[in-house]
Each structure stands twice: as C-alpha cells, then as structure tokens.
Image (cartoon, rainbow over all chains, first blue to last red; front, side, top):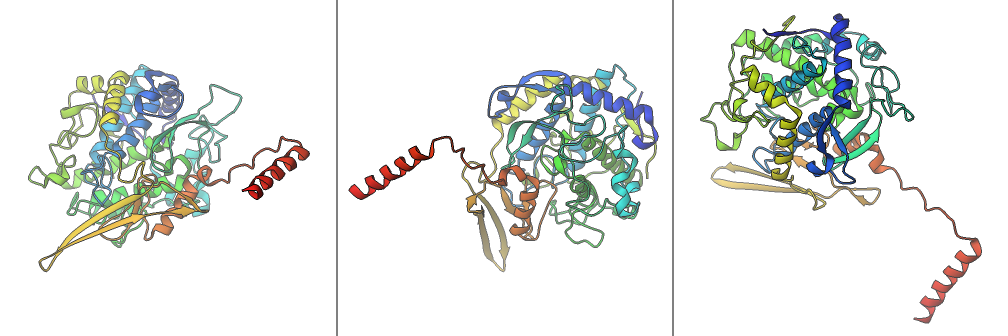
Length: 321
Length: 134
C-alpha cells in the first residue's frame, strides 16, 4: 500500500517521526569509513545519513558528458533533475521507515511557497524554524533538534562537507544556516503556479538556459524567462549555510525542500500526463538524462526516468496543486 | 518500480558499495588538482567552426583558489562548489564563494612568538651577517 507524504507544518506526528528518524540515521554506522570514499585525513566511520551527503556530492561530480560547458551532471542542470531526486528521496524514505520500524511513514514536505507569501521579515519566523521543528539559524544552529553543543557528543554534527573545489572533506562542527542573507525572500505561490503552467517538461538545449518546467522548478530561470535564482535553487540559497554547498543534504531541511519539488513534479504530471523527454533518440551527449538511461543510483537499471514516472504504488501526496 | 528492489537498493551496505565503486570511477572535473578551471564552448556559424576556450585563474588576497568555474553557452558562470548559483560574471561567483566558504578565506593566524627576543635578534643578525658575507 502506498504511503502518504504530508505537509510537515500540519502534521505534528509526522514532524516528530521525521526528526527522530533523521537522528537515528545520523547515529547509525553504515559500516563504511571515510577513506573508502577518498576523503582525506584519518579514516572515520560514516553514518547512514552521511551516505546521502556523499551520494549528492558524487552525483554532482559526474558530468554528463564529461567536460560539458553547461555544467550538466548526473543529477542537476538537465532533464534527470526530477527523477534523480525522486530516487534519492525514495531510498532515504526507505531508511527512515526502517529505523522507525514503520512501513507506513511517509517523508514530509515543506510547502515553502506558503512561507514565501508571508511578508519578507516574517519568513525567518515561520513555523518550520521553530524549536519543535527544524530549529533556527546560526553558525552553528543553536535551537531545535539539530542544535549544536560542543560538549555534547550526541548533538547533531556535520561530519562530511565539501571544500571550495567541491571535493569531500571531513569536518566536525555544527549545522549552519543564514536565512535571507544570500537571497531576500522565499519563492511565492504565484511563482509555483506559473511554473506548473509550463507544458514542456524540458526542451533543447536541455540545460540551465531553457524555458521548461524542469528548468523553472530547478530554479535557473524566472517567470520572465530570464536567468535567475528561482524555486528550488532559491530555497537553497535563502536558507544558506549548508544548503549553499554540494553537501547540502547535511541540513535535514534539504529533504523537505526536495519532497516539495517532487510534489510539484507530480502535480505537473496530473496536468500533462506521465511524460518525459528526451527519449532514446536523443544524442549520446545526453546519456544519463534520456528516458531509459539508468539513473546514477544503487538501483542500477531498475531506476530510469521512465520507471520514476509512476510511483503511485509506493507513495502519494496528501495534496497536489 | 517493485518495492522489494527499492528495499534492497536502500540498504546502507548497498548504497555504500555503490558510492565506493562510483567514486573510484568518477572522473574529476576539469581543473581539479591543476589549480585552474577550463570551459570549451563550440558552435557552427555560416560554415565556420567556433571554439572558445575559457580558463579562469582566480586570486583572492593574492592567493590562488581552486574553484571549478565554468561558463555555459549563454555566457553564464557556474561552479559546482556552489551548485545552486549561476552568475553573470566570474567576479559575482567569487563573491559568492567567499560567502559560501568563509573559512577558506580567513587570514592564517600569525605564528606564535615563543622564542626570547634576544635570541630572535641574534638569529636575524646571523642572517644579515650571512647575506653580507656572500
């Protein structure tokens, strides 16, 4: 039976389960050590949660094709953006269910446009940043369930990050957020509505300069068709801190943002059908982004964009747009 | 997608194996390890083949930084160290890098002065003497 993914601000039980399961994954040893992923320094145990941080950075390093000037990689800046993150979220959700021992748990989403509709100065005080939810901002974050305490070894710590070259490195520090510093305000409902009105899922040149649904929700172009930080990207940049980096899954709010993006994709498919482009007649330069290409994941050939179009047997949303 | 396949793929052991394998094969981005970054843009126009090679050499406070900047066909600058940004100029991207990686731009703390002043003086004098001799 499909699990139901719900809005975090309206479901306290789901919110508390999410926090609990993230903390459990963060404490669970994956059985792997940092040196197995080429991370410099002394070999240290890697948690299951941090495997998802490494996965995101690794996907970003795999350019498709190598050296392409558009910066298209196996998860971003191209058509596979939505299906790749769908796979990541499904595997993450499976792990949350496992540590909660609750097969009915659905990953919650953050409807950030609701907060974006608030006056700018109120957005940092939205319910999601409460001490009973994701906590607030700071370097380090000092409120909420992911607050840092130097003297508390069980406090939430960032252990794997990236350096200025985008390479993985070991760290030991608290979570960082800086609301509204690198971007003034969150996206608004009107921006989401405008994105959903775009009918092509994607279009040539399949990059960050195309006026398509995928490119709009990924956040490379605004409503006027002009290059801008928008929707998904704007949420990352507005939250700031960890969310600016390739290692952005370090912030548990990463998954809530992407769950909302996945909900927008699902909403788009209710309007336009379960369709995806490019198909397999597209140039080999788009390998990794075509409908039957394997998505870069542990699922191998079992996960392709086509396989990700209808996942209604696995999960559904409490509300689409 | 079958739930069983999903469960198997989600196991930490399976994800760890996949990542370890993928990182061994993952090609490094252009410029990684070389201290620079390079973009090659190609186009055809009126029967002419255009190739534009852009290389960034970036210094901040006189120090070379190894950020993999690229430039796309529209001339926008991107950098996977800050994957959610795209800027109109490389200067804007470097400003964002300074904000995103503050510790990489912090001045190194001055060396601790642990030696007695008289000894430092004599070392300095010895150096001067050495220069003078040669």
